[in-house]
Each structure stands twice: as C-alpha cells, then as structure tokens.
Image (cartoon, rainbow, N blue to C red; front, side, top):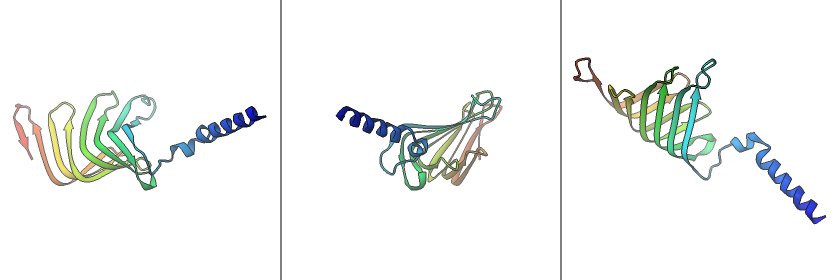
Length: 152
C-alpha cells in the first residue's frame, strides 16, 4: 500500500510538472537563465532558416513575462542564411510575447561584413518588422567604395 501511495504521488508530481506546457512556459519572477537565446525563423518554405536571433549572457524574468537581458546580442540573417547586422548592448528589456526589445542605454550596430557601424543611446527593436530605432546621440560610420570612411 505504501509503494502505491508513493508511486501515485510521484506520477501526480510528474504530471503537474511536465504535463501542463502552459504552466511551464510562464516565466517566474525569481531565478535567471544563463546563455539565453530566442530565435525567429522565416516563413515556409524557409522555415528552418533563422531570420533573427536575440541572445544574452543572462536573462532575468520580470513581471508580465518581460525579461532583463544582459549583454544583448541581436543578429539578423537574410533568407539564404547570410548574416546582416549585429547589435550589441549591455542590457535591455525583452518582451517575448510582443517581440520587442528596448533600452535607454548604449548600443552598437555593425554590418556583419564590417563595412558600417552605428552607435547611439536608447533603442527599440521590433522583431516582426525587423526594425531598429535608435533615439539619441546617433553616430555612424560607413566604408565607401574607395576604402575611405564616411561619417554621418
């Protein structure tokens, strides 16, 4: 009888822990994750190709499903897998439900081929439209075809 009771408690615990995906997906206001990554894929027929990847050294949950991402790295890719831009920032607030990332802090955007970079303070990333808005102190540098530098 004791074995059956312990077995029933164990099964109930496993069902509660793994049997309800919606409960597992809810972020907890405590704890953190190291090596965080969130990937968006292209629509079929290229559904196995990454469109963008937002990653960070650490993610800490906040209320309402928001995450504080430390050492943000945002990468975009074209439909052939070629890297587009790389954005780096010390931290941001990521809303996985709405696909946005924002911060009042500094960021640096680099073309993956090294031909340009943009820096500024304060940004908003809209994942669905692949749009990045930089709000303050924007400085940019582009390499010209004559291998000179163009500052804007």
